[in-house]
Length: 249
Image (cartoon, rainbow, N blue to C red; front, side, top):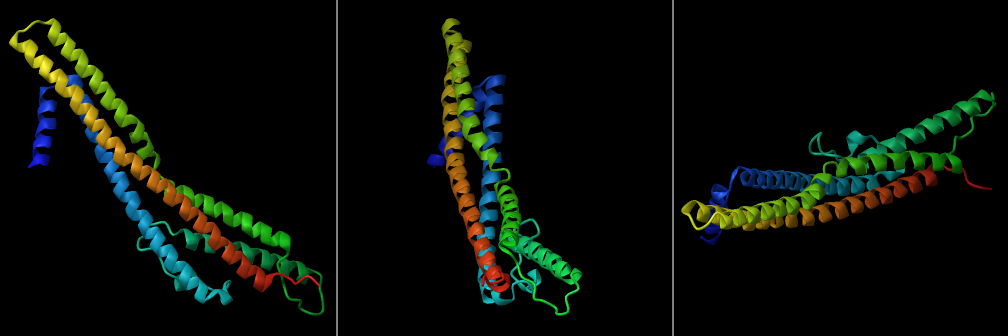
C-alpha cells in the first residue's frame, strides 16, 4: 500500500510538471531501465563465468599430467556461446604457443641432421614467451568481462545531475508561480514546480545508489576473476615447466 502511494506521488509529480520537467523524468526513467538491464545481465554473466571457471580448473587438475594432449572438448564448456570462458581461453593460448615453440625447437634440432633424435625441451626464454602470450589473453578476457560496466559508472554520475537539474528547474517554476500572484494557475504552477523539484531529486538518488553498489561489486568481482586467471596461468606454467623444461645440469 505504501509502495503504491509512493508510485502515485511520482506519477502525480510527472503529470503536474511542464514539458521540460517531463523530459527530465523520462531521462531518469530511461537511466533506471538501462541500469537494471545492465546490472542483471552482468551479474548473471559473471556468476556463470565463476561457476564454469571453477569447474574447468577442477577438471584440469585431474588431467594435468597430459596437458598438451588435453583437448578443450574433454573439459567443461560454457553454457552458451555468448558466455565468456576465460580459463578455457587461457588454456588454449598456452597450449597453442607451447606446441608452436616445441615444434620450432624440434625443427631446429632436426635441421642439424643429428644421428639421434633428441628430446625437445623448453628453455627459460621459451617459457617467458609463453607467459607473456598468455597474459595478453588474460587482458583480452578481462576487457570482455568488463564490457559495458562503464554504463553503470556513467549512470552513477548522470542520475544525480539529472535529479539536480529537475530540482533547479522545479524551484524556478515555483518562483515563477510566486511572481505570478495568487491566481489559480499560479498555484498550480507552484505545486507542479515543487513536485518536480522533490520527485526528480529522489529519483536521481534512488537510481544512482544501486548503480554505485552494482558498479563497485562488478569491478571488484572482475578484479578477482582476473587474479584467478593469473593464478590458473601460473598453475599451467608450472605444469608445463615440470614436464617440458630441460633440467639444468
